[in-house]
Amino acid sequence: MWGRAGGRTCGIALCLALVSCSQTASRQAQPAGPPVARVTAAPVVQTQPLAVRPALLVPMVPGNGLEGGQNVTGGLAPARRVGDLPGSGVGPADKVVALTFDDGPDPSFTPKVLDVLARYRVPATFFMIGWEEAAASPDLVKRVAAAGNGVGSHTWNHVDLTRQSDAGLAIQVDKTEAVLSSETGWRVACIRPPQGHENPGLVRRLSQRGLTTVLWSADTRDWTLPGTDTIVRRALADLSPGAIILMHDGGGDRRQTLAALPRIIETVQAQGYRLVPICH
Image (cartoon, rainbow, N blue to C red):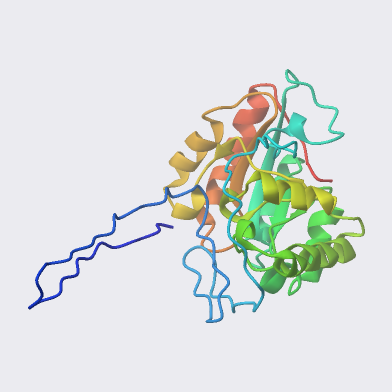
């Protein structure tokens, strides 16, 4: 999303001197991933790919100012490759790749993604939203877990975690973790911040909750519906040991992703890589 600050001039007529002031317009770079809802007192209208979600009335805090995974004050960095995950046992040269899906589970598309994975006998990892997704489809969460896939949190209703107070994290993070852990049968210990919004302060706060922040090394941007060929190309553009590929099984029309998935799996396997779950 773009931030906007307009310019303006002001003057006082019929005075001895004319006073003018202006503000410089500023713009914030658009990060990768689907748009992030903002929690306000008014209803949140979520644009593609997520549906409209009601706002949660929780306190907000400003961002912590530092961007990126490295924390100069001693915090932890997000995992961007499989080998970055604590206890993965994966070395820099190990030819493994993780397919990951955000914004589900979706009752229409997630079962179809699972069918493709089952046909190729490969696992993936699903970062799930708690509110209208996981909490509304407990049997689907159980099916994802029972098939040997990884499960992680994608917050309660897809908000920017860098702007959440402790009360906000209790809803967005703790509540989602409780739902997912109840439905999978194990403690969910990974979280992917919506749109990849993170900073050292947030990563540290999540770590204090026992959660590993997981990002990605390849972003297909499939939520923009760029076409099946483009999704395949983006998924495989930087194929290398430990790659984490970002796709979506929820939040919108995922037919292009479904069409791309077999080609991605076949190419990854043909190049000698093994597909593995993370956060399992």
